[in-house]
Length: 283
Ligand SMILES: Cc1cc2nc3c(=O)[nH]c(=O)nc-3n(C[C@H](O)[C@H](O)[C@H](O)COP(=O)(O)OP(=O)(O)OC[C@H]3O[C@@H](n4cnc5c(N)ncnc54)[C@H](O)[C@@H]3O)c2cc1C
Image (cartoon, rainbow, N blue to C red; front, side):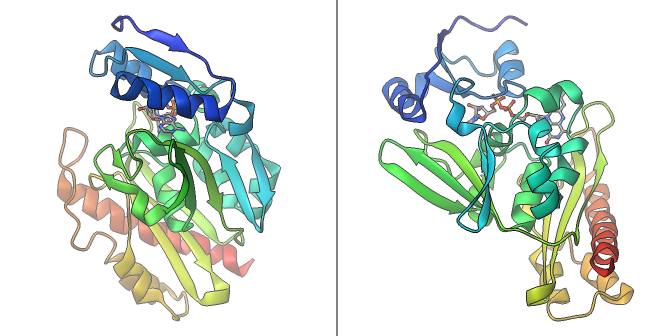
């Protein structure tokens, strides 16, 4: 349980972090809250020679309004998100997801950027940022670029980040209170066996649905979304849409749940999240 030796670097600015990461290449790993990386290092599944700690970079840790969106810095912790008044007011889905992550210690150290970059198939944030249609700003030695949430998750623990890029910011649209996140959690860790995040956009009569825990990567339940397009959120429409939440999905099958059970949970949790969000829309 002791990691192999590594050099520890603590840049003070984001640009320094980019330069150090480029300089050390594949020998280096970025350290955020360490709640996924450090266990992996202790098990020697990862043996980086250099750790680049983002913890001292003040301008990566914020939650603010910016150009009509809400911008969350990659180093914002789950706890900061859970207790943010701005998010509670303008993007309440994040405040509903955050307290469902792990336990108090995990929420105090773990960051949204670390979670998204890690792309654990059972992590909670991916479902929310997919449902919200968020944008992710990433940056590397060649400059910054924006990746749409739906293009960010590539496969099991794989994202669209290039090897020398860092995630800097998550940009979210303001929403109404008509949102919900419902998950069936793995008892010991809290990770999702199946989690469904729903955002109702009354202005466009559309719904965003993100699902995590079920497949190798989190996904948008597009067949369910299409079924509800322009439709009233009546219970029969919700049930018909939720039925499609695991359509054509290759579900994971492991010691925690079979593929069939995961697909079943995806449908049930999508239905419950849609019902909850619809009830909140009426208030
Ligand atoms: C006991 C336990 C229970 C947990 N339960 C849950 C749960 O219920 N739900 C859930 O969603 N999560 C859960 N987690 C995971 C937790 O949310 C972590 O916060 C998350 O996995 C990683 O965030 P981190 O800040 O700790 O990242 P780290 O562990 O520091 O980094 C994770 C990976 O991302 C990379 N990385 C980090 N930041 C960046 C960046 N800005 N740019 C590019 N790459 C970056 C690192 O190099 C590393 O490869 C749990 C963890 C533990 C230990």
